[in-house]
Length: 196
Image (cartoon, rainbow, N blue to C red; front, side):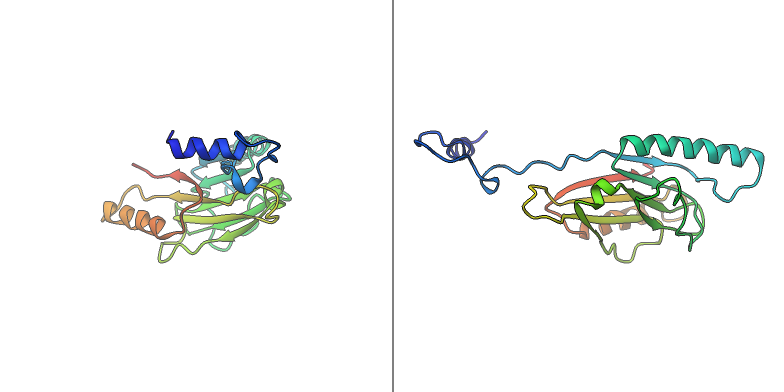
């Protein structure tokens, strides 16, 4: 720890000063956001299946999502395999939660589910990821609603990177470049399936 930081911390604790008031929030180091976040490449929610095996798979996935819901404040999914206009998937399983969809027809897509305990405390801003193919990256900024609540803003990036096809490395690098252009300087949770 640098000498300057030790001195600053000692000053904030009031060492060397008689009857010093307790440190204000603005004079101490800010806490790191402490949220419980889960990420899962679900490889299809099996929502549109009609066979016995797809219905059994859907029930199993739903049970696992309910378990994640009990232990997580934010759940990030990759490859939900939703139709492009589906904005009701998991509405009953995650009732009361904020559901953010990034659907693409095909095998890609991301979905971010946000607990009411987070949305009650934070404004959730969708960040523009630029010219990124649909279903690859979601980016959000969480800003405290009450500036006096001693909460810190934070970012969540949920990504699903390509796993094959032509120009694979070029396409992956383009996604990392898109992430690099997003705002920074706040605590960031980068989650997903990067297919390395």
